[in-house]
Length: 123
Image 1 (cartoon, rainbow, N blue to C red):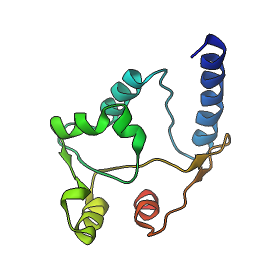
Image 2: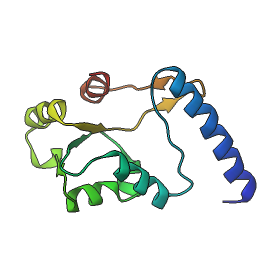
Image 3: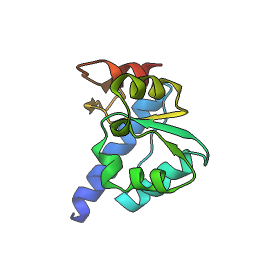
């Protein structure tokens, strides 16, 4: 990625983070996947129970593997019955999920066929 694109991403992230903060949410900017993984792990204390909705970014940066291998209780929905996985997600300390979109003024946009992801985000 060239320097102009990196600068554009950083400036856009600052705008989005400001928008999130105006809606009582926190945002973080990471320049690369290593920094993103480090930031995510700093936000999740050891011993936490973590559930996850669809979130390819968490896989791509190595977060899921780090949670599975670390001192965490990672709920792997693929190993559970559908209802069991859903109920476990509601009891988790952290629910990781992507957003379908985030506007520059901090609005999260999510569309969810079963409402399992959106309901966990909203709780």
